[in-house]
Image 1 (cartoon, helix red, strand yellow):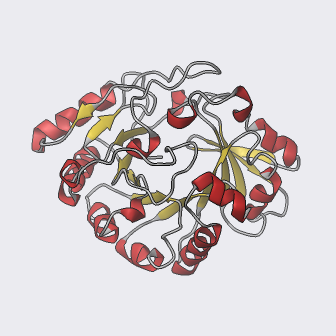
Image 2 (spheres, rainbow, N blue to C red):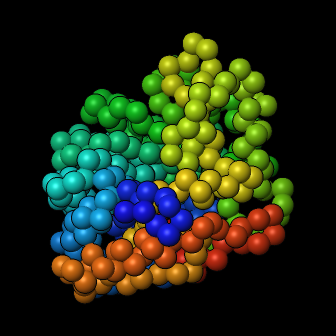
Length: 315
């Protein structure tokens, strides 16, 4: 299905929980946020129904997000339920990987296609400071377990934070030198916890190209601009929502853990899907896609219009 601006929408990001075992500084307050009650969270059956409705209007790829999706009990069962929906070709997950090591093989067996792993630093003390609760060793163990389980084309997502991790751009990028992975650097967005952060925290992803000058452009993949360095096994990606808006090629919609469809990450608009089924659910899905705005309105001063934090929406 195409939205009103002619974009082909075939990608659903489904948040399975608003809970997370970390408290990343750009995502959640140190003491956390009020959590949804169990009754407010979509059941696995409701999630499968939403995925089936999305597939009926052209969605082919589903990404399970959170919070931290591995914090949802029985997540491998949900992976299998989503993978079995007719029309769904790919089921991916975004995770901080700190809980992944003992679960990787089971997720792979259940039908999980690919992983995106959030990793903002390679320094253990800095990792603890950024995540407030996580341990770098656990995340790295998760990455190794994913490799051993047979996951390929893994992506590492690194949020660029000026004065925090922008001195690690080369070491982070070089994770792709000897591994067939993509390391993606994401510009920090004025949203949630960091909406009012000082200007110096927001740095252009162009800084990556200065830190690793041998990188050469090789095209794009979704919202990411891809680069490759001679002799490297993997690639480096730049995701630049602040300096190079990519809204014109956005192909996704999002559903929150409490069942509200967000046509755009940075819009306040939401459509409730809870309690709908059959034609009514498909109708609401179509309405959400049709309501997708042309683009966000964030800039160097204006923050996101979203009324939710990232842990409530899904990264």
